[in-house]
Length: 99
Image 1 (cartoon, rainbow, N blue to C red):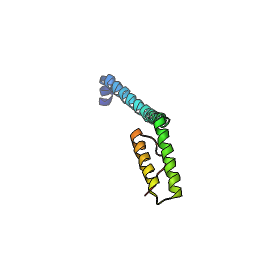
Image 2 (image 1 turned 90 degrees about the vertical axis):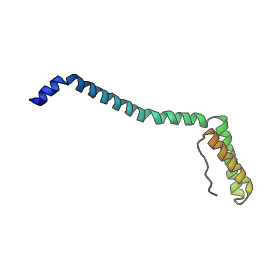
Image 3 (image 1 turned 45 degrees about the horizontal axis):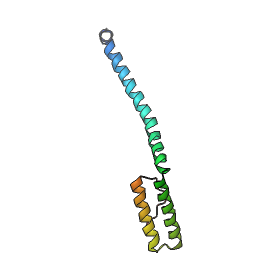
Image 4 (image 1 turned 45 degrees about the vertical axis):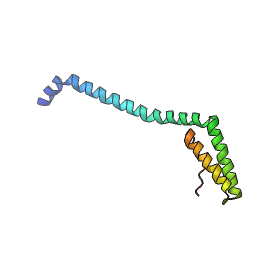
């Protein structure tokens, strides 16, 4: 009987708390779904810029030079420049060469 009386007296508070919990859960679920899509779209937008295209071209040149002469200094210079551009313009990395 005490529980029923307690529920009757605090029904508004319980409903408000329940609605708040459901709202926060819904917002969290929506953020979990939409935030990664937003960041992926922003990254695709950045990757389609002229600056990121120049980074990818330079990385491909460095890779071509590396295939021709792995011990040569030319590919290392080009690759270092490509890495700088990738970090500066926040492009998606395309080639990773371990030295």
